[in-house]
Image 1 (cartoon, rainbow, N blue to C red):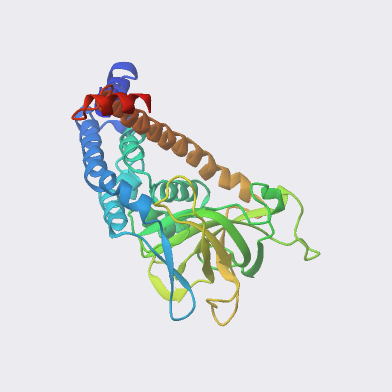
Image 2: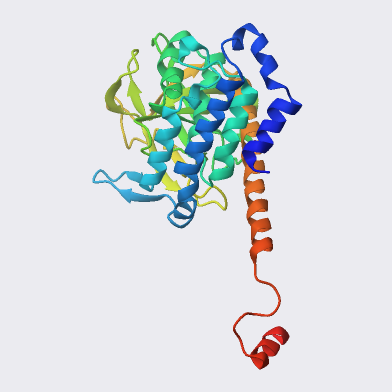
Length: 359
C-alpha cells in the first residue's frame, strides 16, 4: 500500500473526514476538493522535492563573503524551485480564512497533504516555520502586524523563523541575555525596540528563498534598574524583520541589523540552513545606530507564553515529518531487502564462489 492509499484509508475510512463539510466553516469543501489538495501536494513532492534529496545531502548550505564583509547563504537552485512550487500551491495559507487568502481547509487534510513533503524531502526549507510564525501572529499580533507580516508569510513573499536559543543558554530560555531597549512606543507596527544579542541553531535563519525573513525573537526588556529580569518572567517577544518594511508591507530598502555569523551543520535535514545570528552588533546600522529594530508582540514579559503557540505547533509538525522520514527509510530498506541478490554470486567460477562464501 502506497502513502496515498494509506492516507485515503485514514482520512475517509477511519476518520470520516468528509463529515467535516457539514460544519459551516468547511461547507464549500467536499471529498473532491480534499482529493485535489492531496493530488497537488503529492505531485509537487514527487516532482520538486524528492529528486533533489541526494543533491542537498551532498551540497549542504554554504556561505560566501560579500564585498561589505557580510555572509550570504548559497543553496542549490532546486531548493528555490521547490519552495516556489509549494508557495504557489497555496498550502502556506491552507487553513486560513478565505478573506486572508486561505482555503479554510480542515487541519487534518492540511496535515495529511503535508505528509507527502515530509516523506519526499530531507530538507524542510522554511515552510513549516513560516506557517507557524504567521499563525502565532494571527493569535497574538495586532491587526497591522497580521496585515503586514502574517499576510506576506501566508502568500509566500516572506519566510519566518523562531529565534529562541542562545550559544551560552542552549534550551534554558530563562538564561537568555538578548536585550531589548524601547526606542519608540508609538510606532504603527508596534512598540519599537532595539535588540542586541545572539541566537543559535536558528533553522532557515538566512537564505534568499524569499525577499524577506520575519524573525520572531525572544529577548528581555530590562527592569527599572536597567538590569535584565531573572528567569522566564522577563522574556518578551519581538518581530525582527531581516529588511525593514513600511505599514503597507513594502520593503523600505533598509537592511535591519541582523547578521549571519555562521552555519551549523546538523545530522538531519542537511538541506536546511541552521544558523548563528547576531542581532544589533552594528554590521547593518539603522539610522546610523547599532541595534536590530524589533516590534513588540503582545504584552511585555509575556513573550514565552506567546511563543509557545509556535513552539507547540512546530513540535507537532516536526513529529509528523520525522514519522514520514522514518516511513521513507523503512520502505527503502524493505525494497533493498526484497531486491538484493542473495546466496551464490552469479557469473563466478565454482572455486571462487566457495571462497566468496567463506569470506
